[in-house]
Amino acid sequence: MTEAPANPLRAGIRIGPTAGPCVVVIFGATGDLTRRKLLPALYRLAQQHLIPAEFAILGVSRQQMSDQEYRAKMREALTEFGDEDTFDEAEWNSFADGIFYAAGEFKDGETYAKVKSRLKEIDEERKTQGNRIFYLATAPEFFGPISNQLAQANLARPEGQAWTRIIVEKPFGHDLESARALNTQLASVFEEHQIYRIDHYLGKETVQNLLVFRFANSIFEPMWNYQYIDHVQITNAEAIGVEGRGSYYERAGALRDMMQNHVFQLVSLIAMDPPVSLKSDDVRNEKIRALKTVRPIPVDRVDEYAVRGQYGPGQVLGETVVGYREEPGVDPNSSTETFAAVKIKFDNWRWANVPFFLRSGKRLQKRVTEIAIYFKEGPHRLFTDNDAPLEPNVLVIRIQPNEGITLRFGAKLPGQAMRIRWVNMDFRYGSSFGIKPPEAYERLLLDCMLGDSTLYARRDMVERGWEIVNPIIEAWKKPASDFPNYEAGSWGPPAAFELIERDGRKWRKL
Image (cartoon, rainbow, N blue to C red; front, side, top):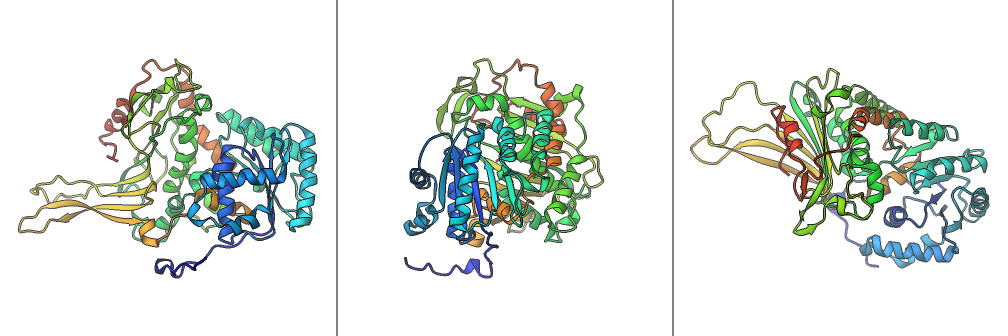
């Protein structure tokens, strides 16, 4: 292969630390998550030499097959979901030598005896030193049984100098009660420092950059409070529908699927105070401290703080699509929300009287996730005669797509008259660094191997998210009488616009 020319935009950028020896045991090894995300992410880490030669993957699933057959399936997955431009056959063959497979039912003790035996063989062959990551890429109903079976097989606690960790995919429960029950069940088997509750949003480069942007730039942090900020908008919009996951979405809905976890993680990063260090517990302590000050939503006044919606037929990106109730696996009279908008306030000094408006939905006009910080107007208007109305300064942090940061400010148009136009100052990851940001699962998997839990959700964070939305969940148990109430390809139901306009604000045009 011809060596690529050096990228001057990358000058001075160091490669991150390399993980130590370990085995990643994936329960749900033939599932969609493994094929689309986990296997490609692990392969890319190997390509970047961020995992050592003493590394292995042990897939565990129901389907009977040999190691070679499983390797062939993962090769197909990489062809379908990986980056063909960077694929190298020799690198793949070396990587595939460390992929193994064990078949069995997740609730069957014999499966774990087999896993234990295979791990012993892998340790000897691959020199992985007894270090384990158990990844639960399964349906939520298996989280508890798998952890209990790992305990019974003496696989949950490490031996000697080795370490053992478990990664749990969302959803972390269905409500506050079930989340507490799951956390209690996991805690009966693993220590809290062993449990990594994954939220892939926290692995996105722009989300991680929030800490740098806030605390490495002295011009912004002094203004990051009620004195200068009028309100905050966080939008998570998807153009897609439920994509064949109707039966799952019927049990979840937008509030549980996105708002309680992904969106609240963004809220905590915006609202938190500076941590005393970048150690995982110091960062997560400040995040939970911020969320604990969210003002409780009165159960009898939920309609003043939250709006739900469900999409009907319409057109998205030029394509005619069916309504949610016509999707496969969906009840034709379903009251499951595909859109949720929530207003929250904080009872603390930093955010006194600064509302946060949050919205998340499917089948909206386009795919975009962003945070918009609206600053207050100046105390005195000097420019009253110009031909453009004065607008607030807005700082926009784009999570996806086109990751970056935009600052909107007023500038004088050239000419004799004092005329103002609103212009943007843009930073984009791709053009600034000349490299595609790594996928979220790459960063999160590597962090787990390194024992860094900063970007993982802690038990108290998960439960606090459920506490905040619990009054809304209770209020929304009553079936909606007006569903569907927004057209696919729009920006949600009219009530969502009324929610923010009652406060004298408007949703940002996207």
